[in-house]
Image 1: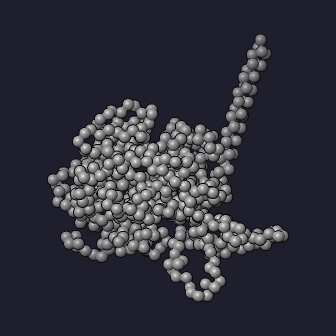
Image 2 (image 1 turned 30 degrees about the vertical axis):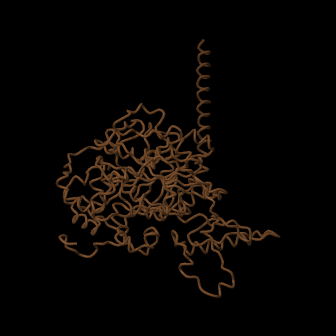
Image 3 (image 1 turned 90 degrees about the vertical axis):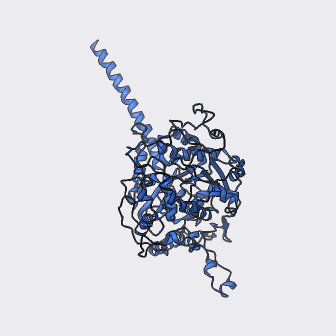
Amino acid sequence: MLHTRRLMKMRRHRVFLICTVGLCVISFLHYYKALHYVSLLRELSAPYPNIKSFIMVTGFFWKEGSTPLSSTSPRQEGPLLVYRMSDGKPRAGEGLVLDTGQEPEAPQPWKRPEDPQRRSSGPTEVHKGGLIAWQPSSPTNQKPDPQRDSAVRVAVNKFMPRHASTPELLESLGDLHRHTHILQNDRTPYFVRTKAGALCFRQGTEVAPPKDETLKVRPSLAAIGQRRILQKPDESQTSAKSVEESGAAQGKPKRGKRLVKCVCRPGWHGPYCGVPTMVYHSNLPTKERLTPREMPRRVINAINVNHEFDLLHVRFRELIRAVDLFIVCESNFTAYGERRPLRFLHLLLNGTYDYVRHKILYVFLDHFPEGGRQDGWIADDYLRTFLTRDGMARIAGSRPDDVFLINDADEIPAQEGVLFLKLFDGWTEPFAIHMRKSLYGFFWKQLGSLEVVSGCTVGMLRDVYDNDGIRLRRREYYTMQGFRKYENDTGHILVQWSIGSPFHFAGWHCSWCFTPEGIHFKLISAQNGDFPRWGDYEDKRDLNYIRELIQTGGWFDGSVQEYPPSDPKEHMYAPKYMLDNYDHYRYLLENPYAKQFKLGGA
């Protein structure tokens, strides 16, 4: 009897041991598959190893509930990290209730099937499971007094004209915010085949002029025309690379075959000369698997706009060749709940954006989420949720492998990185962007870069993030319920990577980049969730005080950080369109108050 019990106990232990070994084998196989996408040796040898990628891989097996790993906040700005500065910035287009003489009704195109029944009138209720709001400790703040601010608002009215909110403008809106956009295939010949048979990216390939023309005249700067893109390659690396390539070609010659390759311009890499330096020096783990597409992806760029109209022009000019559709969301209320004019709609209708009008899908937010006035993060999150769901529901003809890119209005990606996403297969998702940080203007360059999770494919946006832009920006994909099914359906393991690096910028983030009047408007428009809310303090709204901040690079708490030297001639100082129109953007390219001035004058 005792012997039988011992045998049964041993059998149970043996079964348990076999099951444990089986689980370990399955886990190892999945981990080994992940290693094909994330090279640990390459990460360790990189000059700026992406430690987060290791945490991500281990997160496949060990999770602490559903809490996402902490990452660089896409909205941290200002001089000190003790404040979440960018969280306090008024989000572009954050506003919220249209007074049309009747109770507004929440638009239905993007409504989730599982959402609770919404009320037919009044403010729209926020689905508590869909938005994650940060609940800060709320200090007692001084509330703004409209009468006290009336004198300063005279200057702001110059910045935001009265006619932008007239009933005629609202009537002219019509059904513009309900139009459907049909995505068309991009037939642009981005690649060219050389006489030798090589397939080369036009923008990144050096083309030799005809022999008879080379003797006539030197090419002008305008003829060279191509922007000095990205980082100048190290001469030693370039020479070593050419020697290595030529040596490899000479070492294994094939009889009867010519060496076929593209000659890359500075700033471009790869066998097709289509990989920009910002991708070449990124932590993309699949660089050796990149291949050009036969049909380019369509790129959708979603943004919210408040009053960043100069930067909006720069975005359109920078990305008009790479982006197929801009989804622009505007509201007639600020994130604080106060009325604001539909200035972007006015500019859209008067022809200001006619050069890009065919690529703009206008989204109008006409309601305010319940609780948004008490907790500004509800309104802040809901803004991007509405932008994404309403905009994507009105797009016809999209494909799962198209690219979705969401930015704040003060975040401008570089054209080359977006073109790479459009034209190549083999990169993983989601992707972030390393941006050059600056404050008040490009002249106050901040240390490091701002790394913002910005995009993925349309299929991942739909299946993993539930068409919610705020989840893409704030949630780690492996905390989402649908990510494993999406991996199985597509056959690709999701690995987050970043375009650029802290030393190779892939875009620009210009925080609080306005005139003093524009900064004042931003202060009074900020949502009620980021504390201290500087717009609640009268002295912080004084225009002379704001001019002094721009002059010194100081912050509203009285601190002044150290800035590295910067020069408009340096690489990636500002977008090309700004430098080409220097006089118009001079107030952002040069410190307008660099010289001593009297605060009473100016």
